[in-house]
Image (cartoon, rainbow, N blue to C red; front, side):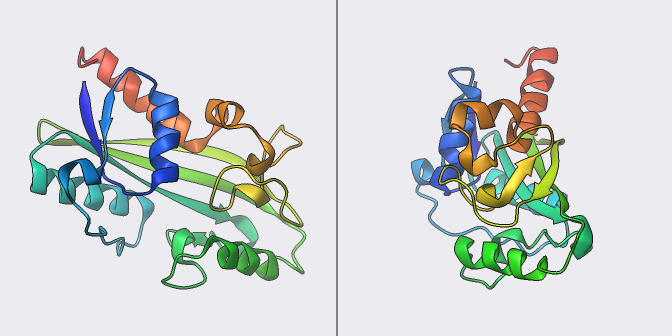
Length: 194
């Protein structure tokens, strides 16, 4: 099966390729000469994922999936949430985003958080959504250099390491993206599409 991933984020593309293996031939936006950044102006993670998938489907007519991910922190009323990538500003600077989260949590005892991913798949013009959630907590400081985004400050429940300290293979077994993508794969298998 062939699918376009509605993203030009190389870190995300590599993570999806590792999770999918050879089950699906994955194309990114540059394979279709789409260099325009897709707007992420919706007010929920699900709406952002759906908008991105529809945007690329309308341009290519090909089966496509898009994801949107947010870090939701309980004591910050769910922030940064849908604004995770641009929490500290429009430039989408991960280091500044992490620092802002740590600063906002300075006097907070509750550090419970979750990563949430929504994958929107458009197959033959129909849209399907798949959710992946990993619960955990925000650490007091950065730990680890692997991964991207908030991985160095997110410690999944039941683990002593942050996502940033885990090898990619270990992270991909339990990550929010992996949960959502596996739900999508199961859907495709159940419907004899894979």
